[in-house]
Each structure stands twice: as C-alpha cells, then as structure tokens.
Image (cartoon, rainbow, N blue to C red; front, side, top):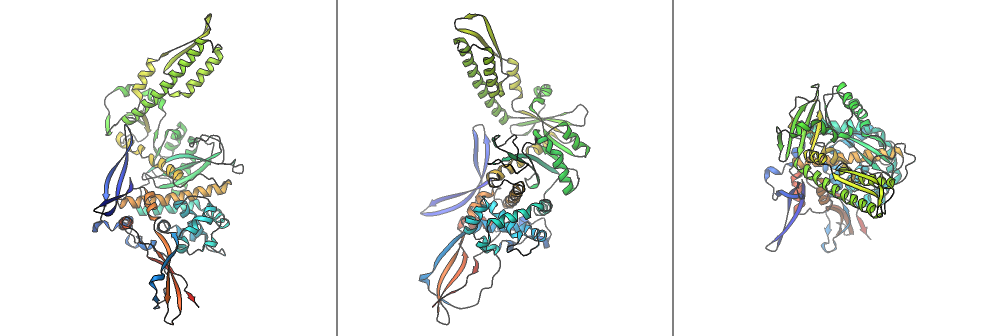
Length: 593
C-alpha cells in the first residue's frame, strides 16, 4: 500500500488530503483501490511515535528528539528589525535528509560506527562519512562525485551533521568506503539485534534469494566480475551475484556477494554457514525458490537439523498427475487451492497448489507461443512447397530455431520433414505437422499448478503455502535495491569498492524498511517513496533580517530556519508522531559600517 496526495476545490477553497491506496491484480491487469482516506487526525492517532518502540523497555524507548538538530546557543539580545527588508536566501533540501538522519540514529548506527571507527586525526569522523554515504544513497542515489559537487551542497545535511561543504569530497568519501568494508559482520549483528528490539522481529522463518547486477566496463581487476545468467537481460556484460536473507516482514538479516558465474544452488551451503557463524545455529525454516534446490542442498539442511520449504521444477508435476485430477483440494484464498501429498519415506511432504490467476497467465503465454509457432511452421511449409527450401539440413536447422524461440509450445506439434522421392513441381521437401493431443491435455491439466517441497510434514498445507508466498518479500527487496537505491555499481570497478558499495546499499535498504515498518504501524501504508518525496519539499533557508542594535548600529542578522510544512505534510508528521524543527542555528551577524 502507498500514499496518494489528493486535492479538491470546494466553495472556492482548496482542500488537500491523503488516500491510502492498494494495488491488486485482476484478469485484466493491475488495478488500484482506495483503502482509506487520511483526513483530520483524532487525538488517539497523534501518538504515532509510540508504536515504534512499544516492545522496548521504558528506559530504552527511542525519543522524537532523535530527529532534532544539534542545539545551539542563541544570544539574548534585543534588536529592532526592519520588516520591509526581510528576505529568504539559500534554500536547501531539508525534510528528507532530516528524516534519514533520524533513522540512522534510531538504528544506533552512529554510536556503533563511532565505537568501531574511533576518531583520530581525520578532519571528519569516519562514522559521519558513512552516514553521508548512506543518507545520499537513501535520498538520491548517485555517484560519489555527485555527492560532492551537487547533492551535499543542495541539502541541509551540513547543518545537521556539522560538516562544512568543503570537507565533503570524493577522496574522503572513497577513504570512508575503504574503512567501512571490514565492518560488515559487526554491522549485520548490530542491526539484527536493533531491528528485533524495535519491531519484535521473528527470525524463525528466513527467506533466501539471489540476484545479479552487471558492470558497464570490463571490470578486469575484479575477480568476482564474471559473465553468467543475468537477471537484467545483459549476459554480454560481467556481473556479480548478491544473495540476500530477509525475515517474513522483508527486514534484511544478511547478504553475501558471489562471482557472477556462480550457480544459485551452489551458494546455499555458504550462506547457511555464514548465517550460523554470525547468529548461531537455531531451529530455522528456510524458504527458497526452485533455483536453489538440489538434493545435496536439502540433504545438507537436514543433516544440520534445518527445515525448509522450497519450490520445485515444473517437470515434477508429471509425478503427481493422478493427484491433480482428484477433487480433494483445500481453498486457502480466493482463486488458490492446495493439497498435501506425503513423500514415499514419510520424511517429506509435497504441497500441490493451483492458482486461477496463474492459470490465466500461463494459458495466455501458451496461446501466444502456439500462434507464433504455427505461423512459423506454415511459412516453413510454404517455403518447402515453393521450392525455395530444398536442403533438409537447412530445413531442420530452421525448425530447431523456431522451436527454441517458442519453447513453451515446442512439444505441441509433431513435425516431420521428408525428402520427396520424386519432385512435385518445384518442391523437393515436404513439411507436415499436426497437433499433439497428449500435450494439449497435459497443458490444460497443469496450467496454473506448481509444487512445493518441505520436511515440515506436520504443518497444514495452507500454512506452508502462505509461508512460501512470503518469498516475494525477498524479491521486493531486490526490486527496491535496483529501482529505488540503484545498487548497480556503475562508478566502481575494484573488488573492494564494489563490495562496499553493496554494503552501503544494504544500509540504505535497512533505513528504507525501518521507515516502512514505522509507516505501517502508523497506518500510512508501507511505501516510503511518497513520504520521502513530500518531505523533500520541506526546505531550510537563511532568513535575512535587517536590524538595528541597542548601540544604534545597522546590522544584518541571518537565521537558518525551516519552511512551514503545508497542511498535508502536517498530517504525515502528526501520524509519525514527530515535530519538524523551526530553526537550525543563527549565523554570525553582519555589521554595516
């Protein structure tokens, strides 16, 4: 669910309010519907901050002051301000970086990195550099050069962190990345504990998935950059693979970087052992897609006392043809039915599932492939009949390419290419094809069906299916990382820098999910991008006040203040339970001689 800003004019007055909108699928595609309208707030809804720390002891609960800027001393002096000369200068983006800086401190990353990276002779502490890199990735993903030349100068982060603009440059940012890389394991352990405190996270069910991200250059100095199966449809470029473990709520727990040509199934043992090394061996249920499945991996999990719910290859459906025709299915939600079948040794169970939406999707894919394939066969037949196609070897190669291109329907026709004993006009070959009735019957039976495999033989099939469907949380994590946080290392080639870049994206994703959980508890949906876009409209600027002091001298006073949120933004702030500051600091007075 996500927020949508709505505006309406009534009786000549403009009204702004928020709608909570949900996306859902129909037979005709994706649709949206309004779940609720967020108008004026009731008194009971104004304490949104309390939801964030409701599971913590009283002494450890986070306070809204995390989002306040550093305090400053305001000299107590009376001056006479000339109202006609007041002006506003140097507008900067404030709301989004203010919120991100508060999330960074809410997670305790400022204290953790200060302990792990104690200050030395550097001009800016390395923990602050790490915060700048992560907040920039969270708010406006781009290169380190963009941070130096554009983004940092345009935001109010210098006021929040106390780091002048001239001290933020690429050399310092790259050095900060090099310092941050060895701390990956300590950061993951800290975040696991902190997220568990804030949101009462359960770690009994873990979802593991893998994706890839490619390089623009050849990345010759990176040993992990290899060509392999690309999820971005770029097999021509070297890439690295990223394996991510998340909880049932999509909160990230751990990740690993693998070589770009690594097969998914070969990463399971490494990721399980790495997780057990960091967090200990416990009774966990691993949920993985069929790309991770192999007999060796399942045997490895069983030997360690692990439990699993995994997808299976589509070809396994053939073994359950009898069960597919029976009627003892259990409905788990509208359009989805499941049934359980015990394995031959009773140590495993198979959950058969069929979905009406998936059936419509697969029927459409099969129909398109059938039409394309039959059109190609007719052209092949016409070419042979006209004499343009006379070589049977060439004809078989063309048939092979046609079947490969339309592989979903490659078994739908029985095709024969025959050389004629006697020419029939210009024809030397005859191409015949006919529909395979057995394939058609099996397609109609199996469309929309799939199988899950598990060693949780006592769990109800409906519950097993619901756990597996939550694997989409890991898929959404990758989608957010690629679309919103731009995880692809466009500006990095060295192995260490690439790994640190992915670590920063991981930290930015933790901020993203922390805000999403906070929004969910405040009934604001779970899509932070709309909220961040609105907060980015809140600016800070220098209010210039021409004044006359008690000594009679003319002076110019500069106050760095925050613009007033509009009515719709105030609704969001009240729901979150925080107040945006009005003033940041007072700049030095300029005395006019």
